[in-house]
Structures are given as C-alpha cells and as structure tokens.
Image (cartoon, rainbow, N blue to C red; front, side, top):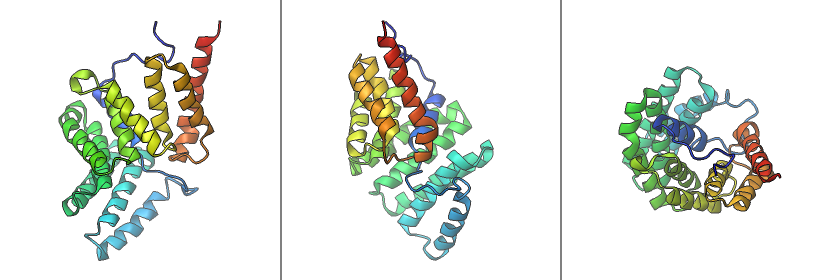
Length: 246
C-alpha cells in the first residue's frame, strides 16, 4: 500500500540538489535581522572591507562564503546573479581549504556552494560534480562528526539519490538521526527523517519528528521554519492523521 505522504518517488539529480543546497545547506540562523535578506549586501560590504586587511584569514573567508550562499539562496532572483554568488562562495571556501584543509566547515561550505552553482548550470554539470560534492561533505563529517548541517546534507543526498548514483536509505537514516542528535533545532533534518520512517511504516516515530518541528522553540533557519518547514510538518502530520481515520 502506498502511504499518503507519497514517498515512493524517483527524483532527478537536479531536483535532488534543489532539496540539498537550497533547503538543507542554507546558512541563516537565529537572530536574523528584521530586514533580511536585504541586510546581506551591507554585511557583505563590511566583510569585504575587512578582507583588505586580513586577506588570508580563514574565519573571514568562511563568513564571506556563508554570505554568498545566503545571497544566492534568498536575495537574488536572477539566475546569473545567483550562480555568480555561489561561484564566489565556492571559490572563497576553496581558498580557506587551501589554507586549512582540516577545517570541517570549509569543506561543507564548498560543497553547498558548489552544489548550487552546478545545479543552475544544468544536469550535466551537476552529475559531473556529484562525486566532488559527496567527497567534501564526507570530509566535513570525518573532521567533525557533530557537524549537524553536513550530516543533514549527506542524509538528504543519500535519501533522494537513486541507488545507481549512490542512494542509500539506511545510511541516509543514520546521518539524519545523527544530525538530529547533534542539534535538534535543524528542523529540516527532522522532516527528512520523518519521511524515511514513513517508508518503514514507523508512523509513530515519524509523527514524533513532525511534532518536534512544530513545537520547536529555537529553530535554525527561523525564516524558513516559519514560511516553509513548520507548514510542511503540519501538512504531513495531517496526512498521517487522515490516513489513520476510519
């Protein structure tokens, strides 16, 4: 019997990267300025001025990479602008890796920006970059097993990729459970995990994850939680309830 959440689907690779890089990897956190995302441009200007004095500072390079990731996700609407933002974010993260290859967050930001850039270039570019993306996310997790964003990224990737591209639901579940254990305020990880539980008919476990999303008091990605993640959890929870009705 197909469950009402409609989880038995085949996702094209470009669609997978939409899920991963736009929904999973976004850098917005608590304390988002009230004028976000317009606040990103002055923030970028301030960081670029600092870089003139601290050109090789890894922390500054990563802050810049984060801002470019956010600008591509949330500020720009034109595809060329978005692609250039992701390209610059990837370039800065790569420079940080050249200086400090053991920085887990640099590996994560490189993969997130690269994934978005290649997605916008088309299916061929995305396919060619897949191994590189996975390699850097794995490296981030190896360096920091509690890097919740990298765990969420890899879990979503493994859940949605077809088997012939390396998809693995069991490994996906492991990564997502680790992401939630490391930081339960990454509510998209809970939604992805709930979907996997439903595929195993673990409805009570799925319900618990969705209820945790709805009740979250300090969710990361608060803007996304308000406008997308919480409504999505409410919708999926209602479908679960309706499916149990006589």
